[in-house]
Image 1: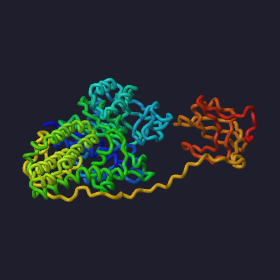
Image 2: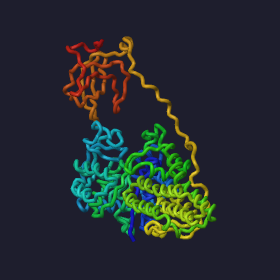
Image 3: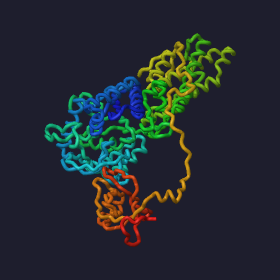
Image 4: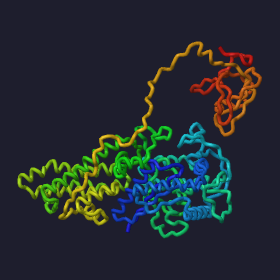
Length: 633
């Protein structure tokens, strides 16, 4: 039997589940359900990533141990997926003993192979992203390119993975496997990153304890493993790598579902680790975009983060699943709004699907006592059958490329054929004309189209489609899929049952939106009076001392004599343009009545004036030597 192995990323337990987590998981769940329906032996993995400095700090803030905190948040993920009836086969946690043993086994193998060596690491580290970045990738040479937060210089003993060794093999992989990264547009980003040059990767830490220790055979207890090495290995430790390997026949993974923010880890680091372990490559890294809300980036401060449970409680899990997969092309960013969700429910689901089922139930009951036969369908409505068959046969490649938006869009074309057939052939008129056989065949045609659509839609809306199957008198299972989709057969004599309307119309938003304060009209820059200008005290000062500020690429610490009892300490962002040696003895103009501020832990008691253009930055200085403290007027 053919197999499929599908994974979500394991979700980091620094916070509760949000819409991005739900989106990835629902895509993976839909894929798993589809392949099971196709008769594949399918294994679907999800879980939580629970180690690292960020978790240790989050736990400390809440007065908990890291394990207590991880237990709490991991349970929330599992509870939500269970409530959503996500059909995972295993929920892994990186604190599981089997995972820890498997990771240590992998580390030991890479170490013995010579792909791991000991050295000293010094570089820019972002705690929020749990990642190192070369200076060339930083924003303003200081800030994280992924989250924008300030990085810190870390210098510590570390074990390194020889990532640079695998640069050429990675590029060969991308060239050979056209669909290794989906969608294809994302693969170009990965190629550019690797072609820019790979540096060996620091894979252990000594500055915190919450992580997997190195294997006992290496005997270096002060080190814990880099959280991303630990996390990525879950995809094989979940199958028993290094412990009980009976499930390893599912490897390689067919689909790793990931968000675009973690593409580099999955498309660069992970294949390199696998090459070192001499394991096959995953088939596809399927990468989706991010979600915004009403056109705005989601953030806690704005109060617009989407709780997937709240949406599902308000509108139904099945409707939510359909919306997420239908609303945005896979790989692109999507926007969530209640209006868009309601439009999808009322139009796509209510009008196109639900109303079609209602019409068939009504006509079958009115004309035929709910007893339907399909024996004349092929003879009388061959054109419509061929149209629908062509639509259905084109759908599997879309699913295999994770193009769920396009898949649903095309599937709905089959419903359009059914609705058009009713409007064109008017079964009520055929009944009046005594053409009962033609009317019966038309009702059977539409019922069969609905049955086929339900089979294809089942991975996305499993409960809704079971209700449709119940109404049409068939079962959704691999046998039905093979019979009605693969072999294009029709339902035989069957009875239609009445079911309640599937998608009651929604008139108004169900969830209460947080109202933002009205935006103030943009004003022109105000003019100031001469009196207001004179409130600013600018004085001439002489720089007595200048020093570099540790860990900063831009700031210098200056002592400036303004003719007062003591010199002022001023923190100035001019390090890119002046060295400390150039500044000592120079005169500058200082805003002297500025409220003191703290910059990187140091008090700044004023501001130095400077001018900046395309040629660089120049300090504003007196033309001739001037007494310290002289006011600038």
